[in-house]
Image (cartoon, rainbow over all chains, first blue to last red; front, side):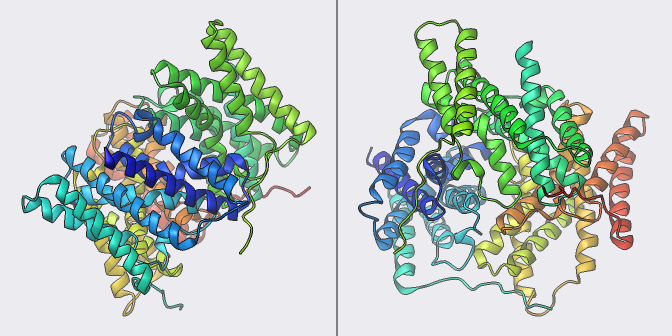
Length: 204
Length: 204
Length: 204
């Protein structure tokens, strides 16, 4: 139950980041709603389509639909008065991403996918929404450029979760462990500016 | 039967708008065909994938495939002689979008989706093709930017359709009502320049 | 069996082209892996989703997953020492695309799709990965712009394959014929600079 509320919180945070990006690009109300919704639900939707699940996250439970669009519009309304600090947003986003990634791994596992595929599904669930947001706003996805351990933090957390389960740790503990690893790795990377090497192709 | 022909007309109009955008970006014949096809069939395809229908619009009935590519190539061939006026295209496009949106709602409803999801599917069916067109051509989607009530007209029409059905209006009448509301709302917005407020994030 | 190894080779080549494009855009390690994977597996994934197959190419056989990401990272590692010549890459890419396109047609045919749909699936399998690569890297897809017969070579090869089968040529021979036609047509177009006319919309 707590997991469910945390996921809705993650949804709201992702939607909020989508709405702010939409504001930076001067989109209108429809654009704000659409980008918020796609940022929040994009990752889970791609995962569900790739795994051929019968119902998507948000067709099965429309609460996700309303929360994501509602959070986007509220961001739009509130931005006249108060814009959440970048730091607060990044920390909340780290939490949302951690929850989404581990829930993606769990779902793929329950469907009998192998470990490698489950990890990929976790990464897609956590990160694809942000990729859609950036492509729709005409940018090269942020997480593909120099960023402070985003997908890589999710990767480590997913592997920790799988190792914990392989060592017979109870499922709930393993999930919690994975979420915490992702969250703290990402927050630490933000604080101390850790990032991955960049591939710069030497010009001919 | 008339609905079917109107849908093919809508397909052709969407394909035509895709081909003209491709011409603005100096794409070649393959690019013109691909963008035309994706503009016309993109919305219905995303809807069918999200709803996990067995067959897509255009795999079930290849007429859509041939009409969309044919219309794109014909636009390419005719553009040397005559380019349809922007106004004519916008009016036809409003008609196509209205038909696509209401047909999307109907399909989602027949599959037993809730009202909120059905509306989202209607909006996707009507609007996603244009989003793909713009992303493929390297633009921020037009309908997310300041535009004259496009998705919002579709939203109002879909709600009118659902209300009409809830009031026991016969399905065919409700559909017609929804299509007309979208069409005239969009055309009126074009004529009198109605649009939604834009979200401009104040720079720090 | 040889086909399987050739397909993995095609996968590696596509991944390599994705990694090099990522290098041109200064993406980090995660970006390189993601773009490599999406370039290599994008076409087959879209085809499998559109045809509603139960398992994707790479969820059914994770070798594709590991080969595509491995090839991308190896390109990243090797690019400090040696960048494969553009000509070598283009020839290998032509081979990979030819194999992917014909395998896409075959799969659609086995699922009972009509000839027109099978051809579209072949083209998507061969070309969609490159479209994703370019959209993710913020470019208008290369194959939509003036290019030396890419999708059109695939189209001719797919039609040759279908005609051969209609004339009762054995399936293996027909496939080989289709692959060779695509490969040599593309290589010849590269050598002699054949391309399709471009649609330039006259400005008003």
